[in-house]
Length: 157
Image (tube, rainbow, N blue to C red; front, side):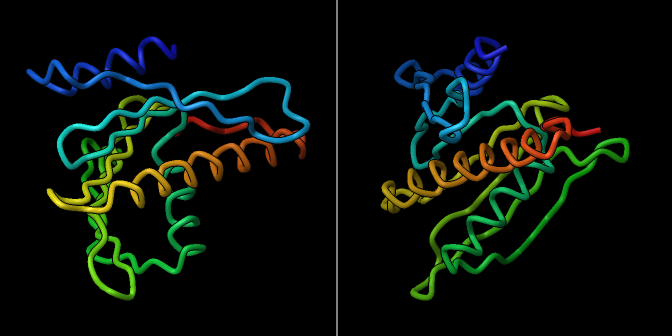
């Protein structure tokens, strides 16, 4: 499954031979028995991150992180295909101005791509911080479900 995520991410690069999927390792919690992996790569001004969660869970984690970091979210847009949300987009701003454009794409019910576009001269460190924070929030959500005896619910219906 993780190989499929890497292949889809690499394939989204088109003719870009320089981009490669880079694993991001994260231990979810002290009680976790395994590490979780998502894949991220830079393509121009965009950092793309793919993980094995549904679009609703990815969106929830992203909005939680944006709120925790006091970022303003504007210009929300959902795109649906046959009544299923396949893409969500936002603009994220700091108190000093525009930080990035966010796009969340449903690849499958249990695999989602998160893209953050910081612009040509944008803040790559902030983009990396956001992706790392979202990944930690996703793992926290999944661990909370497991601790409560609920199915992790990472996939969308």
